[in-house]
Amino acid sequence: MHLSGKVAIVTGGAAGIGGAISRVFVQRGAKVVAVDLSAAAGKTLTAEMGASVAFLEGDVTDPKVAARAVAMAVERFGHLDTVVNNAHASQQAPFSALTEAQWELSMNTGLVATRQFMLAAYPELKKHGGSIINFGSGAALEGQPTQAAYAAAKEAIRGLSRVVANEWAKDNIRVNVVCPIALTAGVAKWKESFPDMYNASLARIPLGRFGDPERDVAPVVAFLASDDSRFMTGQTLLADGGSSKLR
Ligand SMILES: NC(=O)c1ccc[n+]([C@@H]2O[C@H](COP(=O)([O-])OP(=O)(O)OC[C@H]3O[C@@H](n4cnc5c(N)ncnc54)[C@H](O)[C@@H]3O)[C@@H](O)[C@H]2O)c1
Image (cartoon, rainbow, N blue to C red):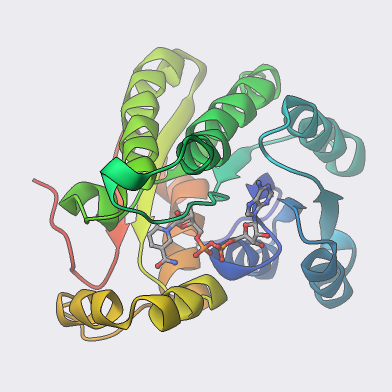
C-alpha cells in the first residue's frame, strides 16, 4: 500500500521500531515529523531520508513538544494525517519493588504522552479525517512478570484507543493499536540483562524469531496509516510472529 500525500508524526521516530516506521513511511511516499530524544539518531535519519523527514528533538512527556510537532507538520508539509505514538520508555522490576520513578517513567512516556499527542493532533486531523496508531505489547496482554508499570500503561493505551475510536469515528479519525515484537537495539540490551526471559519469549514465538523492525512491523503500521485500512478502527493488530492471540 502506498502513503503518497500522507503526513505523519512518529514519536520515538529516529531509532528502533519508530526509526523503521519513519523510513518505511518515506519509502512509501509519506512525509514524516520524527520526534525523538536522540539528536544523534535524528541526524542519521535526516541525512538518510532528506527533506521528507523533519526531525524534532524533544521529550514526548512535554506537552509543548506535542504541540510543536503538530505545528511543524503543518508548517513543513501542509497538513497532518497520521500520528504514530510509538515512543515508550520503561524499566523492569517486580511489582512490590517498583519505585515511583519507574512507575512514572512508564506512565508518562507511554500513556500520558499518547494522550497528549492525540489531543494536540485532533484539531488538524478532524479537518479531513486521519489515522492514529498507538502501541501496545504482548508483555501486557500476557501479564509478563516484572512488567507491571509497562503493562498497566500499555493496556490503558488500548482502553483509551477503543474509547477514542468510538468518539472520533464521526470525524473519520481511526484509532488502532499495534503490538509488535522486534529485535531492536533496546531488545538486544534487554536480552543481555535478562537472557532467560529473552529465551523464554523466543520459545513462545510460533514463527521462531523476533521480528525485523523494517520488514515485519513497519509495514503493519503503514497499512493502518493507509487508506487500505479505512474501514478499521478500535482494533489491535499483533505483529508478533503469533506469540499472542486476541479473541
Ligand atoms: N521491540 C519490541 O519487541 C517491542 C515489543 C512490544 C512492544 N514494543 C513497543 O514498540 C514501541 C517501540 O519499541 P522499541 O523497542 O523500538 O523502543 P526503543 O527503546 O528502541 O526506543 C525507540 C525510540 O524512542 C525514543 N524515546 C524514548 N523515550 C523517549 C521520550 N521520552 N521522548 C522521545 N523519544 C523517546 C528513543 O530515543 C528511541 O529512538 C514501544 O511502544 C514499545 O513499548 C516493542
